[in-house]
Length: 340
Ligand code: SF4
Image (cartoon, rainbow, N blue to C red; front, top):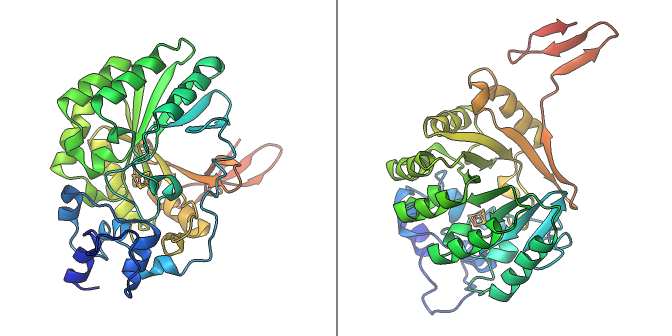
């Protein structure tokens, strides 16, 4: 794709129609999942095939995918009321926004993000009522879309309602905003969030090129306010399936006081096959991070089991044999050691 072509894909369809079915396969992919890239992130992209471009610019490969389930994790079935996913005891996901600062081509919630501009107030009220009445819930994860697409006043109202529920011990926000539109992390937003400790923020980062000075400022603001920061990364072929890239990303996140938390296997929604990294390769990448990276920097490799089985950590086989007196364990360099 030449320079003009991929920049054209970031513009609204010329005839104002949406979706847009054109002869170009990139346009057809755009029709399946609309393009959204803000000016800040677009300026970081050098080409459609660079690690940032691949994440947000539609590709013909999206059309060549037999996957059909738009909700492979069966989140909708595990939703007792709209906007709540209740899969595990003690914690729920609360979907507070259907919008994002960019549309990631690999997003596993495309089905929701595509229905932007829903007000959602009656649904949110019902969701809050559910959480209020379920006193066994201890932790709420605000997700979406991106929760930080909500205006400050909306967020303050939401967080206040949640904080007023005495059974909730912790709040967590999952967001891509500090990495894709760091200007959203204003001093006012940070002061607002800091009023609701203990509140954790997990930030979605996929590549070291995302870690600009503006992102560093956003992370520093959050960390200086005492907000524990973690990262989530989706393992993506052609973007970050490389031990050098992943090591650099995790090292630089640690420098920004963001603790690498999860490295996610791709959730297979339609249009994502070209991003998939086989499990075997993923485990070898994880093994390659051990040793070069401090233990603090090695994320959990998580797979969200299709059909609603939940998240499970994948680990390279460290224990290679078990005896009555000792176990045989492989170290990060492949050496075999015994442990009594
Ligand atoms: S920011 Fe998150 S929810 Fe939004 S499109 Fe990207 S992956 Fe999906």
